[in-house]
Amino acid sequence: MHFKSVIIGLVFLFISSAQSQDITPKFGNGMLKLIAKDSSWSVKFAPRIQFRAQSQWNYEEDKFGKAEQSFLIRRARLKFDGFAYSPKLNYKIELGLSNRDLAGASEFTGNTPLLILDAVIMWEFYQNFELWVGQTKLPGNRERVISSANLQLIDRSILNSNFNIDRDLGFQLRHHFNLSEKILVREMFAVSQGEGRNVVTGNLGGHQYTSRVEVLPFGEFAKKGDYIGGDNYREKTPKLAIGATYDLNVDAVKTRSNQGSYMINDEGFYETNISTLFVDAMFKYNGFSFMGEYSYRDASNPIAKNSDGIPTGQEVYTGHGLNFQSGYLFKNNWEIAGRYTTVSPKTDFSSKDIQNQFTLGGSKYLVGHNLKVQTDITYSTVGGESSSIEYRLGFDLHF
Image (cartoon, rainbow, N blue to C red):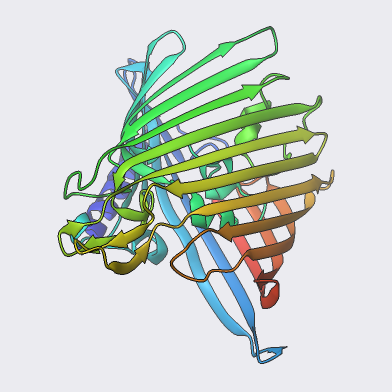
């Protein structure tokens, strides 16, 4: 495929350019790094591999059945970032190469693989104000914004999979200020297309508006640890981050705000206003960490209908969810962590029961999150009844 040839060409061009220079970054700070002699630009290249093995036992006829097993390259990615013209003008490009990253091609994405994860320019144009332009993660729930390379457990919760607002195309304005010597406040506002990443067909519905505020009452975490799973840097004093996001997708045409499937009807697309609320917190101190999240989604008219008022069979996913996660990192870089998640769909159209998940996991950090082995086991219930048991083993390497 043409896009594979382009990627291979870019990587070899970058490596051949770097070989003539003395570039030896520390592991975890990118594989290769170039800086212009006149300091007018820079680029850092960092590949990622995430392997996973998993087994799942589904509960059927009053017992757990035979295990369903699989091996998976969950993520394989290439990341480029740096600055251009000025250190205040930064950029980030992240490409996804695994089948999970590339899947989802449709007429709305030009019937091509979803190669681009991030392609964004970030300009610090005035004091603490920063303008982002392009495709990247919206300022949504904390668990989603945390990189999948820095997760405390092998993957994110079912709260995230059901409610997150992920990536989109548009603009973001970000600002931060100190309310006192220690108290830090961050504000984020985004206007986006409202239909997810890599859409090429234009704006089919309305636009999406996202606002987020964060307060860090005890100052900043070490090395941006409020967006890293686990207390890998063993905070010497208690650190807390509290955040809230409100997202409004006006005339949305997909079942999960900018995610899910398109709600197609006899007139083209069914449109409705979808609002999503997130409240979250992260606490860390001396190896102990805790993260909590609450989500809520509603829609003005959640059941998709044709022009004659007859339901199409699709609806907006509404309801609420809770996610609590905690862990302790021992001084030998072993960590034990647990998570409880509950998701309660709210609908008048179909019967959907409350989902609960209980997860216990362990991690061995060889070089922090850059080189680690993780494992976890999850027990799931639906409507108060046993649903499944899943065991996972994962290996992460990223530069």
